Image (cartoon, rainbow, N blue to C red):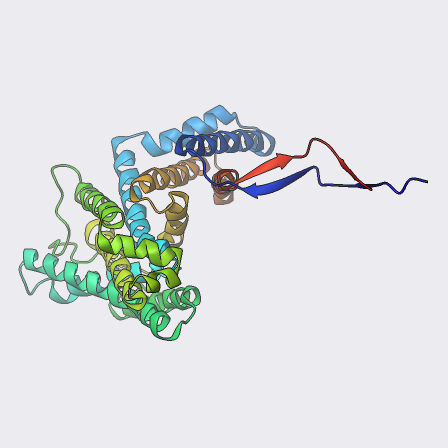
Length: 368
């Protein structure tokens, strides 16, 4: 009798790619977006009986229908991009800064405090300078606290920065109640509405243009800093291996603290732009979850500040378009969230096919 046995191998297995051409990677992402739109169209027809082309037309109209909507989209893009740029140095260093939300809020709180306490006491130009300094310092201090504990005691930075978010929210909540206007309203309202003290100036007819220009400058600066500076090189080395960094003489603790100071400072600037240049008030919702969405933006762009412009645009566009769909077709907010969630699922899922490939087995082997 034969003692042959058949080894049953799996039909396929997954292996990590060594590399993929950038053009092919972007092609995978584009295909994933198109597939997501097809799925959303089918879901729209089944659940609402609406024409999917009308729905997508409404989505585009919601983002670009008027010049005001375009500028609102650019403003939202700039704010999300600013927070994404802020957390990128830390993430590239493999320091998981989940505290962008709190750092933005604290920077905004410092800005609001300057506007409320100094608005009628010093010239407007000097007030704005004080606001800039205060917001940067506040954001940097809020970010460096977990960095020091990580560098000195090797604490878990993910939990530490996450908890700092809630402390920041409660701090803002306290001062909102303390400064509430009018009393009993539970909110501050528009700060210096009559004098516009501390409000960022408009450039021509464009209210948000200054914010957009500032974020554009930060984007270019961050790209140069990460790619061409000595500090950027040290961040990359620490991110690859702390042991290697120590071996070649890099002070890892110093890099961690310095990088988080930068990360928090840029988050503080985002808070400054939101309070001084956009909302002219402060609330616990001022950051609007940008600190968490920014993680996705930074990760999808592979920590490249220039690519983040595109990923930020995609997320903001889908958010604005989905909100318009809910309004026009009389659907509840959940439907727009479903559409946004499906699209994001496909975009994130595309990263699997960029980093891994599926190999199929053609023949079965026999073992004696």
